[in-house]
Image (tube, rainbow, N blue to C red; front, side, top):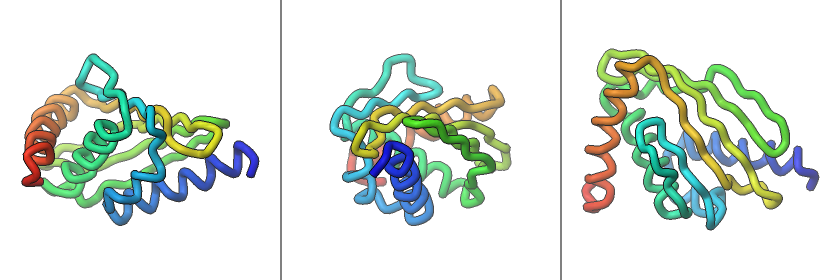
Amino acid sequence: MSASDSVVAALERWHRFVESRDPELLDDLLAEDAVFHSPVVFTPQKGRAITKLYLVGAMNVFGGSGGSDFHYTKELRTDPHAVLEFEVTVDGKLVNGVDILSFDAEGRIREFRVMVRPLQAIQLLHRKMAEMLAKLQAGTG
């Protein structure tokens, strides 16, 4: 499988996760040493477990609070990276952002970076993600 093929396959698996919101799909998709870069947390979150926690939290936030309209509007690929622009409405506010993914040689996500606009959306997501992460860590989300 070429690098390009592995990126395409990984993106297909990522889209399956987004559609199904099944956290188990992330187990094989995330590299063990994956790093998550949040739009609101200064420190990179390192490791598969914490990256998975943030991604599951984000999908829960985007799937609730009137955010069931999450969708990607653009997808750009250049080995071994992809940029996916998204839109979603959360609590009546339009959130626009990009997911920047970098893949390892096996087609696993090794870096996941999220950027969001406008400022009101960042503030809203900061509050909602903090609430969701607390629920997930407590096992109640």
